[in-house]
Image 1: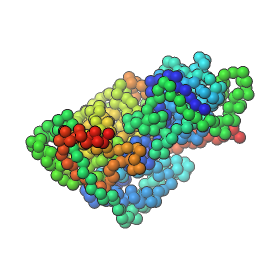
Image 2: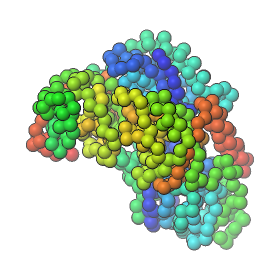
Image 3: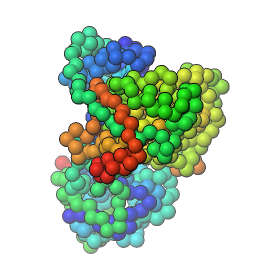
Length: 334
Length: 234
């Protein structure tokens, strides 16, 4: 069982929920930029939420399934088709061996996730299958997918097999069939081009001038073309720190907004360094990582301040929704 | 010890204001205690010069959504402090020599650091290569050591804008810190030289050449020796 990569797309990598426990050795977490989209895709195909999927960036790949599979596509709307026919997002899809998945125009968002029931038969590196591009390890040979790659698959999970049978029974002659049922918009939001992103003030927030603090929350910031899995350079009003002392390097994480001396902020993403020495003006809340992950260069964001208590309440509410989805899928595979 | 949040899934424990062996020991001790006594929801911890950042899963810490996570994790960590500070740490003691070719294309900011310090480039090299440095932490990139012990005269601010790509092995200065880029990455440090040694390999049993708590020295080498050593390394 395997997936044949007929065309790799712009940047398609294997990602799971990241490589945890090695940041003290300087080893980055990596993992999906839009972790919620990855978890939803996995739940829809009967996988554990941590299972690796393909992270597809803007211009998607062309993939032939060499066996019958159950899959789901979540995250960005990149116009997916199966054998030339449009296929839905955020739902289980059964494909017969030989079916070809392709992508077209990027309609909304920038990162889609393709989960395959049972995941990929790829050796984990330091406990994770995530691709760490800059260090060249993890995923498929430590790099983005290329034409001619074969991704070995162990085959669907027991839950996935039940979902596949149900779909196949309803469409015995078809090359593929998709479920009508999808999760609600809270777990599968349509990516917004110019979102408001909620954040908590960062450890060095008070070192910025009052005017810079005000501008940070009130003015829009544009995502520049220097935007990748490591982080996005933003462009907006100058953010000036009134204290000029050099900082000692300390931990930074996904969503940390740091401001180099040039005054233009950088928001750190999945391949963020483990530590950094630039002042941290803010920290985007976990509930809004998906909105960050789906941004494209040229789009604008505004930051809205929330308290830590609000951020954690939103975090727990999102976890409740994911657990409700897991229960709903389990009920269908009993 | 001061506690403050880093977002909604991490808490920072601050053990001091500046670089010092005592602060380093306190952080190493707390790290060792956490490794031996992980609490429910602990994901990992990252030691730095004056801080230990503890990553946690708010769902697990909250006992499946029943309690405010930050307050719970802060309380747990405060209660650990006395026992953690009594934990003896036996760090890796091996001394390491790091050969460095200073200046030229390997150290494009050597002249800037010299000018900033009011010294000749040769004096900068001599001052950088004389102390015994302590590896305070590994961070920023796999195997990247942050070193304490830099001569105060060599402290130089970071570049206003980071370089897009700093080659692997490059030795840099940022404020009172010095360190070694362990892989090609963007970086804002002032670059003064380069070592031919590999600092990181995921296939090694211990993927980072250096460990927090180790001591090291820089040994100046010629460009010819750098080339020779680099061929040997690869």
